[in-house]
Amino acid sequence: MPVSESLDPRRTALVFFDMLKGYHYDRAGRALLPEDRPLADACVHILNAARSLGLPVVYAAADHRADHRDASPVITDLELRRPDPPPASNAPAGGPGVVHGSVNAEVIDEIKPQPGDYEIRKHRWSAFHQTELELSLRSRGVDTILLAGGSTEVGVASTAYAARDLDFNVVILRDAVSSGRGPTVSDFYVDQIFPQVARVRTVDEAIAMLHAGGQHG
Amino acid sequence: MAEPALDPRRTALLLFDMLKVYACDADGRVRPEAESQVAACRRMLDAVRALSVPVFYAIADHRPDGADWAVARTDTNADRFVDVAAARRLKPAAVRGSTGADVIDELAPREGDYLIRKHRWSAFLGTHLQLSLRTPGIDTICIAGGSTDVGVAATAYAARDHDFNVVVLRDGCRASRPEVDAFFMEHVFPRLGRVRTVDETIALLRAGHTGSRQ
Image (tube, rainbow over all chains, first blue to last red; front, side, top):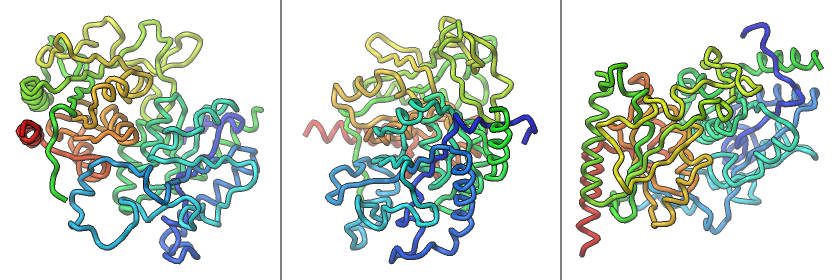
C-alpha cells in the first residue's frame, strides 16, 4: 500500500453485504459456522474501527417474500443443471431461503446492527438495485464504500460494478469477503478482477488509510 | 430441467463495445487476437437478422471535454486519470466523434438497429436500454462483445437484476486474458444466466422460431 494512501472517514461508508445467519450460521441458526470464523473476525475488526471513526455502517441484506412472488425468474445454467424434479424443497432456488422476518434473514450477531445504522433490504443481487442505498450515501456526502461480505462473485461483485458505475470509489476488503463456492473462486475474483473495479485492501490496510485520512480533518 | 428454446420474438442480441479502438489496429484491421471473436459475432449477427431478432449496440460514449468521464479510483487505473472540468477523471479509450468510437465495419449497424450510447460500463446505467427491451416484450438478451470482465460483466449483472434472461455468447466475448474469460464462463455467468456458443444459441433461436409458428 502506498504510504500516501488515505480515506476520508467523513466521506467513507462501510457496507456489509449479506452477512446473514442463513449464509454463515448452522442450520439451526444458532452459531457461526466454524469455517466462517476468520471472515466474521475480519468483519468485527473493520466494524469496530468504523464505529470509532464515526463511519456510517450499511447492512445490505437479502429480503424476499415468503410467497416467492418477488423471486428472480431468470433462467440460469445453475437451475438447468439441477436434478429434475428438484430435491424436495420449497426453498427459493439459489439460496438457503432468506425470507423476510426469518432467522436466516438476520445479520449475524457478531456484527449486529445498532440504531442509526442503515439496513438496506435488497431484492436482487446488487445492493443498489431498487433500494435507497445510492440516495443514502449521496445525501451524506459519501464517495467511497468499503465492501465486505459475500458471495464475492455474486452480490459483492454485482454491487461493486454498480458502485463503480455510479461514481463511488470501492475498496474491497480482501480478508472480509468470501464465496459460497470457496476460496479458489473468491481469491481469483479478488486478485484478478476486482483490481480494475476497486482498490483491494486488507481490513488492516483500510483502517490505516482511514486513520491517515482522519488526521487531516 | 429441459433447456428452453429461445423465442426470436422475445430475444435481442446485444453487441457490447465492438468498437474499432478495442478490436482494430491503427490501420483499421481487426487484431489477430480478436479475429475469432469477430467472426463469431458476425455469424450471430447474420443469423439474428435472418430471424428478425432486434440488434442492440452498446457503444461507449464520452464527451470530448471530459465532463462526464468516470471518477472511481481502482488499483489499475491510477495512471489514466487526468485533470478535466475541475476534477480528476478517468480518460476513456475513445471520445465521441473519434474514429475509434465507431462500431467495427464487420459488424456495422443497420437502419432500425438500436444504438445505446452508454457512459459507464453497464449498458443499463443511465440509458434507454431497459425501456427499449421491455416495450417490445423482450425478456432475453444474448450478449457478445468485450471486455468480458468489464462491460459485459457489468451489463450481465445488471440484466440479471432487471429480470432479463441472459445468454452469454462464450465465443463472442473476449477479455484481455483467456483465463479471465474461462473464469467468468465457468464460475460467474452460469449463476446469472446461460453460457452458450454462438452456434448453440442460433440453434436455440431456430428451435424457438419453429416452435412459435406451430
